[in-house]
Image (tube, rainbow, N blue to C red):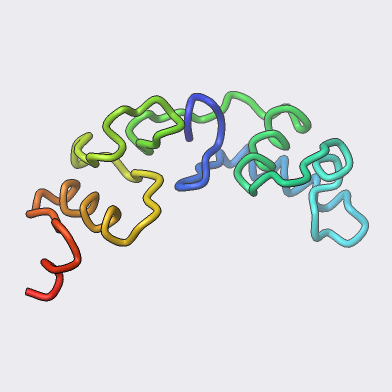
Amino acid sequence: NCKYGMHGPIEVFSSHAIDTLGQDYKASWDGKAPKQCVSGQHFGQWGEDMFMDQCLHKILKVSPRPLDEKMMCESHCDCPAWYWCNEGPDMVSYHPFKTVEAYKNCMANALGVPAVVGAASLKK
């Protein structure tokens, strides 16, 4: 997770967080949604990462938030080298990449192999 909260590329939960969330699911009328988290938030256009982060942190008061800075390198989490994917072999996730070519370059850098320069190089 990120120091700013949970972000989509990888979401890590403690067993306490899962147990607490499970109790909130059990409290709902059909067991298919966390009752307090759904009724206590105005989540509209949020993704699942923001919903879960706010649910656990603000509604269910689960703390502390797990933070391991070697888990994820992302543009929105103050990891300036996210695009180059060269933070070391123990980094789990780099994010975001919006094209296949950018993702392939990231994987090449992370694995220490020559990067893909362009679509023409894919045909060779």
